[in-house]
Length: 341
Image 1: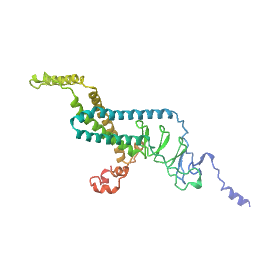
Image 2: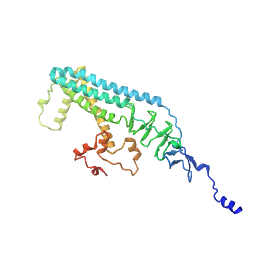
Image 3: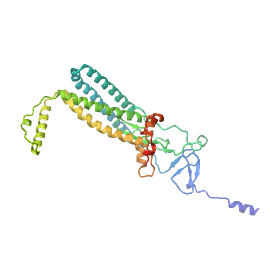
Image 4: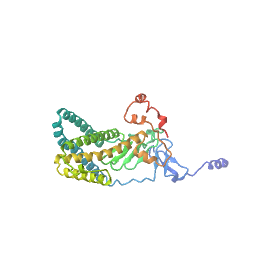
């Protein structure tokens, strides 16, 4: 009897309470070999980080007011371009040709409606919420059900691996690319296509505005005569400099005689060119991330790591919802191995 009791004592182990952790995903208590503030549950796959403290979400109201102010400013600029362009351009266009004026009106209406609609969808549509899952109870959470999920201390609910919490919106966004203050919203899974469509439509519209405003302001520009250009002899550096000064002086003197309609057209021309350049750079950056199969947030998180995304034109087809069969008719693009580095 004493020998039996002696053998039982060898099976008694001491459990250190500091190494016993609870998984937030399924509620199971895990025995860790050593102290680890970050651990992954072997049952549900959830990742627990005890170092994260529940933060204070300060300044949310101010950030929302700031974003909505940007939206109002951008929307007002769009209305000014549309209404000011129509007011300044179409009296001149109608005086030139009625058929041309009708076609220009149709193009203006299509571009205006498309740009404003895509802007509204990108700005006021929810950027995308993470999937709603059950958590916290072992019977309801299956094996691997919360694989690589983390707990968002802002929202106090599970956050999927493809989600990121936006402090400006005050919520987690699925496939978040970035928070754009000009649309007052995040760019995520639900409105990313609308954001790209808005950029494309806005670029086409600004190109159209710059061309039409330049064409119209030429007809409104006051006639000017240069008296010294006819007396030039030779083409040395002094002559070139005199020609340049004469052209600048003539241009500025005639610009002072422009009407209000002409000044509006000049402003529309230069502002559309500057906006066009900025939007083109942003669109190129967005399409390059889509081509790599990433978002801006995932690109930042992958910097410095060995993770290389699959660069393929099919990522662009997948983003816009086009079937893969379309790539069969594009033999130049149907070469995924060519894009891998």
